[in-house]
Length: 248
Ligand SMILES: O=P(O)(O)O[C@H]1O[C@H](CO)[C@@H](O)[C@H]1O
Ligand SMILES: O=c1cc[nH]c(=O)[nH]1
Image (tube, rainbow, N blue to C red; front, top):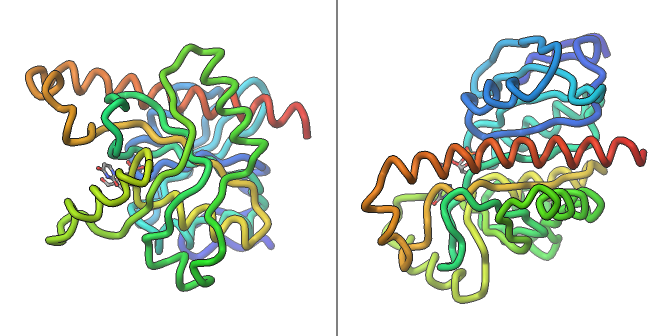
């Protein structure tokens, strides 16, 4: 058990964290560091950039997953090997409903499994669902902090640029799906199969096509909203995991 995991290059000796925050983008890891104390940088290997720190006395591991299901599933498997049991994705997403604005947060209760990775693990009848306790803490803290947030279903996909994107997005938007990303479903499926607690909170960085008129005229304002959303999702995830840790 002393060995470094092959891809994430972390071991049980390096951290005793039970909670991990998982952005897709390695750059977001440094943003999280600003909210933590006594940060120790673990460097990076491939897409996996990691550090750990403390939030009100709770040890938190922060590690990027890279984009998409394959690298996310590898991250989940190897984090489990080093003793992490609660994983909260802090991602970005595209909104799929007109009332959801840039910088709003989407708390995923479940995800449509339009990714390849979760389907390599188990057939589509197996649900991609979040841990209800973590979702409860996230929703409660979002309300307390006064953050614009939406709880519900998201869709995880593997493609951006096929000829069918508009048609697919229109279909799922019509079914009430709140937002799209690439990691939530594989994270939920692999995590649940391995007995881990999973949640996903997503910052809206692209509005749904019907509702772009204001933002499009003011790019700087858009950037500001997205950055604020990112800070909010980080703080929200930390507040939620802190509350959760007090109950364990
Ligand atoms: O910003 P992250 O967390 O990477 O999330 C989203 O951004 C990437 C696509 O631009 C995908 O990984 C998608 O899920
Ligand atoms: O539209 C978007 C934006 C971010 N991530 C996605 O998967 N889709």
